[in-house]
Image (tube, rainbow, N blue to C red; front, top):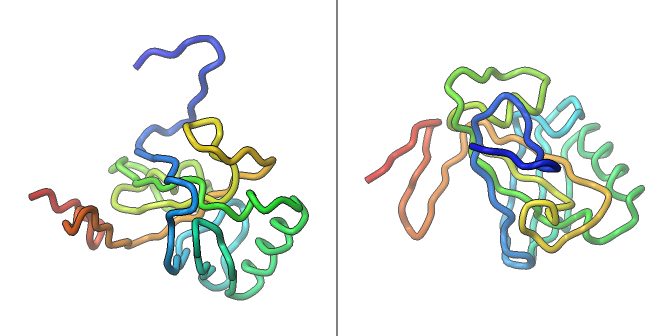
Length: 152
């Protein structure tokens, strides 16, 4: 991969990610791995409607996340900004989000800004949370379950 002046990236390598279509995400997300630099005392559960986090619950960690989002003061901070899958078999779980989001078979979802990688939300906030054992289904086919890819 080649980089041009002004491009950016982070290490370790090992993720694939997209900016979801704004307003099209729905459901319940349970972050059980980590969320940004907030220490999880309990999983953070987020309800999503029309691509926006509408309810955030779960112990002290959820309270801190709600507080940070409120400080931003912009609706866009609550937007589902990123969906990513970890692909690095040597990345380890720990408290370094840039490594944890790359752990093979995990996924991460971010709230906030995605304008820098193809999205439309431009706010001064972007924070990722990791799901340790997601089941990911695309077009009716499960592609990831129990931290194993299941390509048919």
